[in-house]
Amino acid sequence: MNSENLFSGKSVVITRSSEQSEPLFSELTNLGVKVISLPLITIADPIDGGRELLDKVRNLKKYNWVIVTSSNGAHRLIKTMQKVDDLKKTKIGVIGKATAEVFENFEISVDLIPERTFSEGFLEAFPSTSKEENRILLVQAEKARPTIYEGLTKLGWQVEKVVAYRNIDTKIEKTLLSVAADADAIVFTASSAINRYYEIIGVPKPPDAICIGPITAETARNLGWRVFEAREQSVKDLVEAVKQWAGS
Image (cartoon, rainbow, N blue to C red; front, side, top):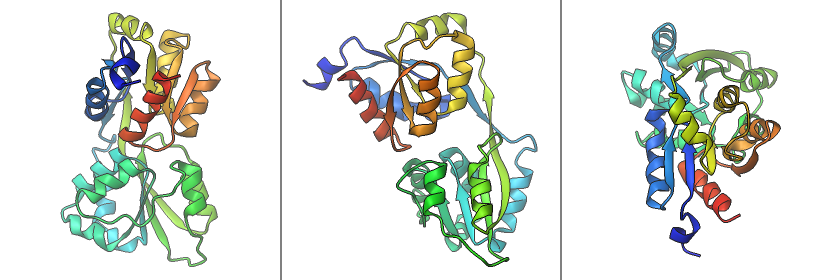
């Protein structure tokens, strides 16, 4: 079955922020999917306007590793740098190929991309240390899960967290919510988006969810969605998961 037949009459909701959704929107539209954009989250500066991140960047030499948990964090980190080349002198660890690609686009090598692209998988791949001076700068969202911070600390590292951005709720029109609820499937890339959508809608509608990673998938599954999971944090893997759904 060709892609035109596979996606004929299918409609899919994208819940990513407007600044992130375009690549996925274009890919699905090119496949013949009717795409409904319903951004539940907006990416915003930290409450301090990024001053703490700037301060950490100015003292980047004191860290053995910089760990970045998302592509949003990577963009914010690089935007803060006066000299991007300074990142080339520090070991960098990321969760997911999409985050790695942000650095690679600036010709910055990434030293660790775990095969299992979520917090627990990252900790499994990260080395332990017994040296007191071994420091990590953990670049993350304001309401990030504590898993990586706690796990790295247990591995013996001195970890300093810094907020690179916040996820804030987007205002949503009721008419758009109604259109989204009548779609065939919905794409979620974070548990926070699932929880907010469910609070508004109250039921798993549309009934099928395409999710990135096991944590997001579990959240959707627990709330009653039938889940199709993209293992990697990338547009390519999300598209593959949408294809799997369409062919089911």
